[in-house]
Image 1 (tube, rainbow, N blue to C red):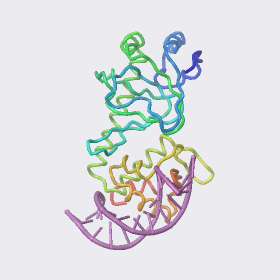
Image 2: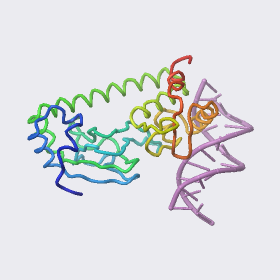
Image 3: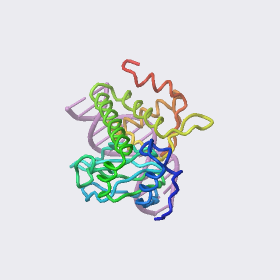
Length: 232
DNA sequence: ACATTAATTATGT
DNA sequence: ACATAATTAATGT
């Protein structure tokens, strides 16, 4: 929980595009930075939304629990994005739980500052709207996929999204740079861990991916693109 | 075409 | 050793 945040940490990030240095300074002065280890929660479903957040580094996933106890992963937050912005959606409690999947650095602001920020800094408001819009678009895509695509296509689409959001190049291919289980993948693609396991095994034999426990490397992204296409 | 159940094996603290 | 992950086959809708 440190202070003294440098503006350079943040000026390149979407929520701060087009803001004057002075404004960035003012916003940062209100922020508290926090470090989370993997497995910890930033906030949890139903709790009063007292803070909103910006992910500086790491990976956070937003998930919700169904009444039978199943988890559904709603969203993966890449570095540089705002999250937990309940106020922007007219909520006073967090609608979901944010779990840190890889060690993360997070900036936090009191939620009471949301309105002032949005009214004072038009750039901030525009950028916040943009992220919400992009998120909605992504959701629409996923609903379409769930409704129309077969499982193998959904899994490949999900994996491709992860590659784009959290891919790290290695000598062999592109690795998802946070720990991810078959269970996680199944929760993101609306299927079971067994199907994911079988599918990944098949892809591994075909040389498309390579995986160890909690680790997936995509060797041939193009093949995944083909598989994500209907009748591929 | 996919889920569920269950049994088996591997892997990490 | 113990818990968590992953594989695999069999059975069910």
